[in-house]
Image 1 (cartoon, one colour):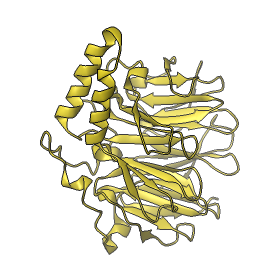
Image 2 (spheres, rainbow, N blue to C red; image 1 turned 120 degrees about the horizontal axis):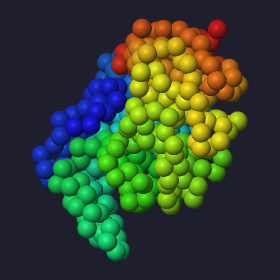
Image 3 (cartoon, helix red, strand yellow; image 1 turned 180 degrees about the horizontal axis):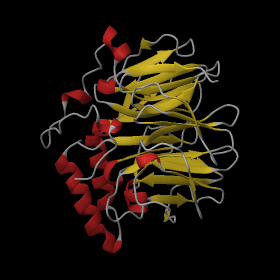
Image 4 (cartoon, rainbow, N blue to C red; image 1 turned 30 degrees about the vertical axis):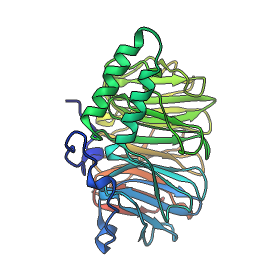
Length: 345
């Protein structure tokens, strides 16, 4: 059994019985004061607002730069692993049991667009239409998805704009939408990943899309996801995250503090001495171009030279999964013990 990142599976639910629709996909998240202290696995900015998500379908939002938080309404109670907003209104969250949620009001309310049952059905339909010798393999993999039930999580989401986006996750799951999530297209057959390695992160930059995953998997698409090619990998451990900066730098980071940077769209890589040994779980580019990384040991690292070097900013002493920047410039980090503001020095 392949390993998922510790933070991504911290709140995983038991796999449902084959063919059953688990209650967590139809039961709204419980609204409770305890939500303010729940494990949070992702945090992002929606305009001036901050939105965070985590265990049991809990979504929190803050309109005062992370000083206080309120709970939003969500239609599911599965753990949510990643979210992204493309503007102050439109955002998507993904998580366990193949769930995809959309918000059109800056994270206040959410609607389910996709789940693992529907995703498996789409994969089977696409496999049936697959031409040539690849059809048998595609049908076998799709039937396994249907038989297994919605037990596989999405681990990241990447939208280029309010219409075009991707969700990705365990065992090579990759789906694309061109209409804001109203419909989804399975993309597994477009990814050269014969071992079915987990896909952990996707980012776009310079006209290309990048995927990072298990066992050093790095892929690039130069045709908006129609096909992907393997990139030379500098590391055989898993990459849990990617950053594609506005200046054109690409960073891949993951297990045991390992991080690498590329200035040529992934054609070559140089190792970054991060100075930490814990796995790097999340990253963000700040308003001034600085880069921030957070580790599962609670370390917060900052780079002022496009990732050539990093310095320890602080150690909040809680396992961290994600980082973003508030409107007032402070960092806001998410982890197994909730959310915390970290003023920049």
